[in-house]
Length: 412
Ligand code: GDP
Ligand code: IMO
Ligand code: MG
Image (cartoon, rainbow, N blue to C red):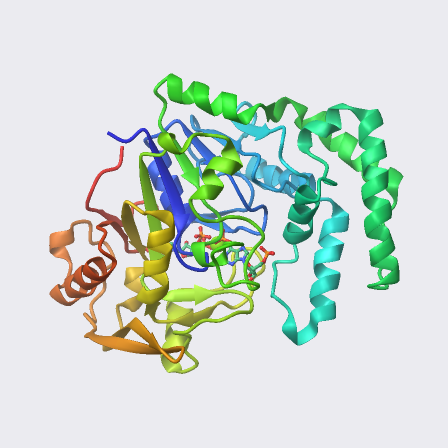
């Protein structure tokens, strides 16, 4: 039996990770985020009620699950506070269940301003970031200029660090981007007031997580973004600024690679992407519009329209090699219900897709719980993907709701 499962997006994000993390945390005791920040938008639908999480792990809807934010996550305390407030309004209490690594680098308002100023200056060449300050916050971590959550405990040091950081960035904001600059005292006071509220959430995460393992607790590791947005292995420079692939779990939470028993690839039955960058199977025709409309493909964080296209098995094969996935969860299969023909890219030629075409099943998959009840044409589509990728499809998701799944292999 697995003690821990890693859940990672295998495409460009928005594959349905949040829904599956919520589903699998039902049988686990803790869920850990290890990279990214509030650029993520993870949607969970329970009894028709939609919850979108950005920073807080997608186990929070289960009352007895511990939610841990690891050191690899860049933390905006303003965003955290907003998200906790929304959850509280919905009667979800995070107190005593949410734990945050003292090593989390902080996203400050200056990082958000820098992210947006850069994108604006790039104009047409922009990356299409979420504008949440993710890139600049990770840069400060790597440059060793950053402020970590645990630094807020030492006020004297904090003030000095903050002064140095803001003087550096303010110079660039003012002289290079011609933008407003940030006041040191205001930023300092804002950080201290957050610290007062959230200091009890601080943990030494690697030791905390190890203790859970030693007590035989089951743990889910929740990826954000997708493998093709990885800073090293993605479609650089049109990527996010963290390691979204498997290695991010170990550096971003401080656990040993030996601790992950099963790695689940979340694969949408077609492809979407938000922001700029290459997308070989992108559709600009009626089929693209149908995918967008049936899949409600609008960003859960920025509300931007997602670009849509057919499934790209070439790109997925690469994700599988890099992550060493154990199995696949194929999501949003129901979105393909109405298509008379469905295409899948099996090769690139001169950067253009070569497709294999399938007959659509043209039946609603809604409500199906057993693999054997799927239409034969859907089974052919699923089996072919499995054969090409050479790993099993262990769950199929056929609707946004928590219960809308066909579970082929149990995880816990
Ligand atoms: P994440 O970022 O990977 O967690 O994914 P998002 O929440 O950004 O986007 C996935 C969207 O698809 C959300 O609106 C989900 O509610 C929805 N969704 C997830 N699984 C399914 C599914 O199997 N079928 C359909 N129709 N919608 C789904
Ligand atoms: P979830 O976790 C889809 C994309 C942005 C942009 C690029 C860089 O919901 O799957 P950033 O703000 O991270 O510097 O932007 O990455 N991006 C996402 N796309 N889903 C996400 O998260 C994303 N997070 C960032 O659109 O192209
Ligand atoms: Mg999302």
